[in-house]
Length: 211
Image (cartoon, rainbow, N blue to C red; front, top):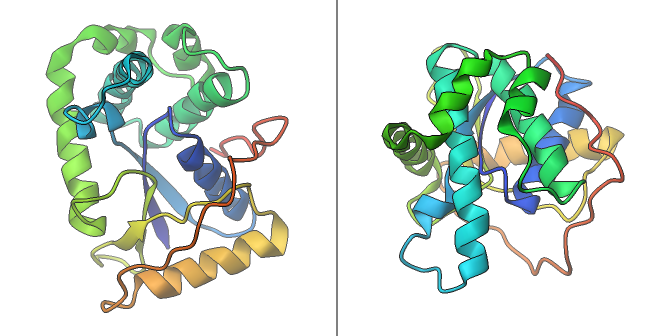
């Protein structure tokens, strides 16, 4: 089984869900393909807070680099890149980090940094967002998680799950199996309860991306 995961590096809820997927990868032979989703582009006309402009605008630069890496065929390395970016944003509270450093950590070509200020990559980000919304719906953000259940099968998925903290071990696997079962039911639409507080981030971004 393969998983497709849409993310914006700025979103702490998406970060926790992505670490859950990585936890599952430690026990299950699943592949993950990482896709860009810009909350900056999605919320462009609904954002009165200048701080949101700054934060979301910063991650659009990151996502341009993500799309440039994908265009080079570096699909697995995108996961390493996201892990490197997410650690800085969510564990070090650093939005001004050098994207070049994250490229180095992800073992990617440093020339991909040129994409950060190249607006022509915004079209690729929008195309990625469209792909995710065709699976999960037009009215959602991230995370979007989709599953390819067999060779040649179209992905099935949904927005979420939204998690306050990273499930570990058997709890992570049970949630994964339950999410797959829900996603494969065509009639399933929504299951929701109050979030109940702020996200609880681990002290270190464990588990790291597994190549």
